[in-house]
Amino acid sequence: GIVTAGRQDASRSDLLVSGPLWRIWLVRVPFLVVTLIGGMLAGAVINRYEEALTAITLLAFFVPVVMNLGGNAGIQSATVFIRGHALGQIETRRFYAHLFRELLVGLGMGVVLGGLAGILAALWQGMVEIGVVVGLALVSTMTLAVTLGFVTPYLLIKLGLDPAAGADPIITTIKDITGLLIYFSLASWLLGGLLG
Image (cartoon, rainbow, N blue to C red; front, side):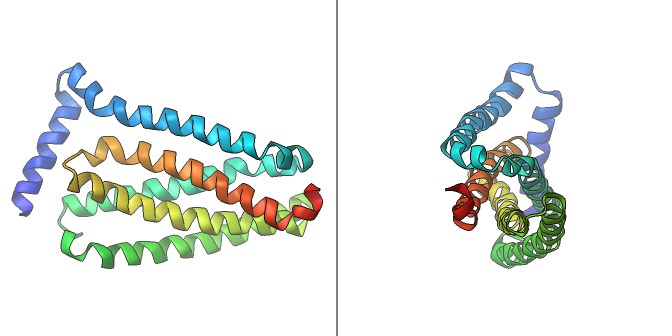
């Protein structure tokens, strides 16, 4: 039960804090390789939408906003899950109830921050359409990111892997690729007339 899980967490933490370097590398490097591959795939997504970026260079201004807010929201959720699980506040048998609540948290944050960013983007660039793209992209990306942030450490624990080493790289990689796809797909759809 909780005692066994606590011992496993302590053992994993001890390895990452004071274990031999080669063991730490074996735990951490594979997850970073996933990030490297994901970064290459994210580059391929940007390349795929190169025409859209060339046609409306304003789109490039907001890529960091979409990427960073989504990433930070996902990492927050992972941290909430890992700490809550370690303290026994998140029970595995009630995982889906916790996940649904976190999804609502992400959706709410996405609506607030997406609305604010959309208004600022529209005012800054003088284009309502850009504001709509940025706002919708943030709502979608942040909701997806917090879901990933909650599910990923849960799955890693279920697989017997250390969520402290693996959750962030996996979340960041998946969120980067999906965030770019969402952003550029929305831009192509909503700004199609301007891209032609």
